[in-house]
Length: 586
Image (cartoon, rainbow, N blue to C red):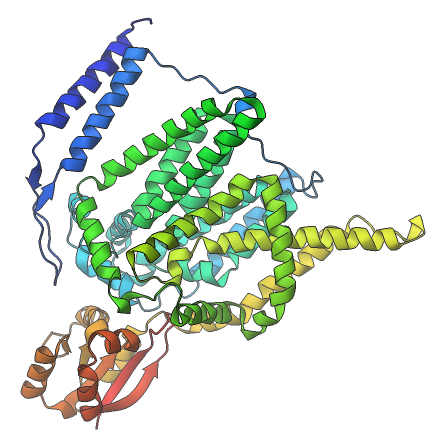
């Protein structure tokens, strides 16, 4: 081994990190802004931090003492995806122009009515972490609504543009738009430019993706970085370039920073690495080299993730367990309620007539799955396996689930449909063409892209009525409900309970209203009865939302609600069970 200045320096850094792992204290006291209703946990364990330092040190020592240098894998250790169709119907310039139009259309659709009222899960990060520093965000985890990466982007947007609805949602819009070209590139791994542009178009006009792109949460970021990590993984296994593996590690890190449940993606990729290595080993005996490469890359990605959550992981795990053990936060995975919620979402997105397409859709899906598997089983597994692992974990832990946890199913479904529909159209046209006895009567080659495009446009058109309705209805209309009560003649005070409290309080504070003077809220029976004793019920207009959660968590409040109030007006919301109900005094 040749000793160089670089190897000595790297070895020295490794030695310092290993020593630091042993001299660091076990706990550290961190001062942080404590959100209302949260229990402060100032003493943070540094066990994971110490292990991170130790692993960093070992890695540096290995690099320095062995003089390791990057060497690309041999061709027999790589896996090259197949192409669905070798015929390119678009040139690079035409595809770039078409994709640009699709991206611009996607941006416009995501900017429409961006200033509508916040819903509960958009408000709580603002109220919980408004006054927290960046250091405080990275060292405290009081709520599952703290999607670290998005919370940081949100603070930057608010700092730049002010605390407006459109500003808070702006990062999600931009991330959602960025997902469209990434999805195109992922589709290009197996399909031609025509199919890839069509698939990107379906995502651009997708009701569900527009919905989440206008939601100030980390779900669109999770989708973006999962697709990007999958793309880098496939490209890395195909070409073994440093840039691909660096991009992969970065995407895994940002994915975990977006949503902590993204760990299922990394675990799924490791299982894929094992399977890919076995395939290569049987084919050319180069599987061990591929496994070493993939293991090293994924270890580095995991190490980056451990650094991110090294201080807050114990607290984050406890918060997740505590939050989703409560039945009202979601549904049991294999339950009628969960199935009904999924069906409700599909009906909203595509209308009731979507059920009529179930049978042809099944055949198209089978064709799509077969085609994708033959072209790149890695791509197929990378889109399916994370969802299976996440569902298995939630089921084993007995945690409540929501359809939004499985957002990765959206691009998977779109990809399967687009590829399956293209294959089906190609096969049908080929059979029709063979049935023609005369060469002069054969179908023209241009008919395939025309029929395929027509089908894609028809599917996209199904979204149109749902999108129009979606733009008319906010996710939760706290602002209108509060204004409605304020418009009442005489003495009329908003009185919100349980899940409506945060939303009403947020917009009441923005309007200059004072708690316990201009508006009231209560969470428990003692708080509820205390307000009724001090205030005349005839002057209080009750505001409620999420009736399922209210019934499951505080059924004792329902008799009092029926005793003093009657439903006055309902403000619909596009969030499931998120209608705002205003109750007037009896």
